[in-house]
Length: 102
Image 1 (cartoon, helix red, strand yellow):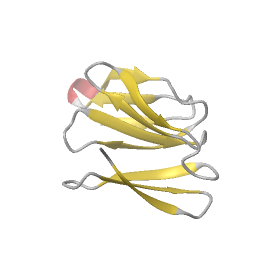
Image 2: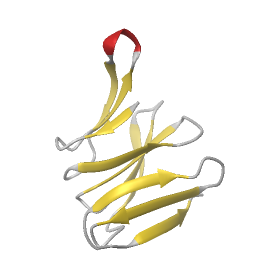
Image 3: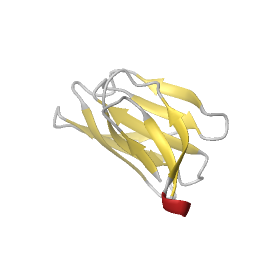
């Protein structure tokens, strides 16, 4: 399970034993509004009020990529296609963007 928060973090959780935080990623400069797990299970992606998209490697616990100014205003949601390398984001700027991942 992945979550994003006003404390600017993305967290990964286990549901066993009542829920324990496994990892904390703290690269965002403002609230985290949306998170998505990559279908491979190797990455967690996030968006937030800093207008960025970030890709975190779960194993190394590092931010691998940042797309700054991905939208003109806060980025509020994110979704991954389950089999195609396509990411979709939407923001307060009323724009939906499709991103082809490499």
